[in-house]
Image (cartoon, rainbow, N blue to C red; front, side, top):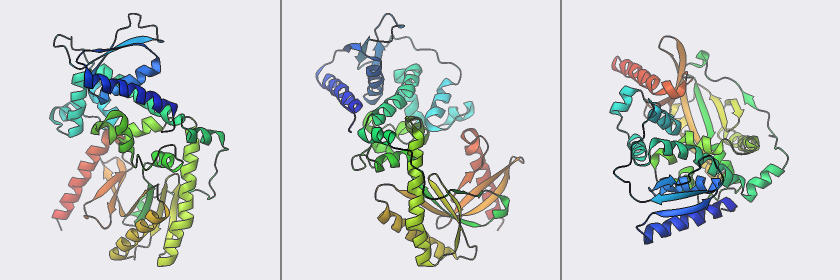
Length: 369
């Protein structure tokens, strides 16, 4: 990457790799700066070593001596964790906050991997890692020449007027919609502007694994991606960039597709990284499936770097817990039970339960048919 921060990372990583390959002794690193320690914290997680700050004056935040070790001493006192802090940190990474009952029986790979990290490094250090990683990624990207150029240019304005009609309404029960969403918009637009090389890092997991290894709990976390990229300096410029790109896809690709296939649609949403069309309810399922595939192929041709998710769905509403009106998108062309939910209150906390409740509702309705 064209960033001075990446050069700094490479130097520290090379030193740690040499130590891991050539010595069984601990590695003592003196006169480290605060940002050196940010990098070393992330490398500690990547290479599964232990990190200790040997500085006696912890209030002096300038230069410090750090010691890295390959093995964990058996007599090291285990830190005391505050009530539910481990589950809260897991939620910070994954967007899943487990209840005590759920945590006791959770068997997912991410949960097991996360617990192994906490048991090895200690919860406090994994919390430190959570603070350090976004800071490092933000500094890394902000120091590329492409991002510096973006910040110098006048703010981009979209050439198309936004459209934002509310799709999730009861009056659209059983209506058919077509959604086109930019995949990982903030990361994709950084690739498009060459702040991140799409040939070296085709996806966010490819990029992040360079710094944290193949740990699934990190590299597949949308929440962590948003933390890392969502606070880049002058982030609104990135938003304007992908909003304009989406508008051009609407004008140059999608409208052409509708004209060529003579499909009657009404645009409901055209803003940010999303476009939603209302399709005619008389349109047959086979034709919808064929048209969705056609749009996908055209987008692949017209948008070589930035990728889009194209889905047709039938909208269903339901009352959750007799209080909240929620909506399910039943995707056309897949298993008829394939769906996701919208408008779930306090989504991070309630989505899993709402999903289960709606699935049971669907299963019972199918059994009655």
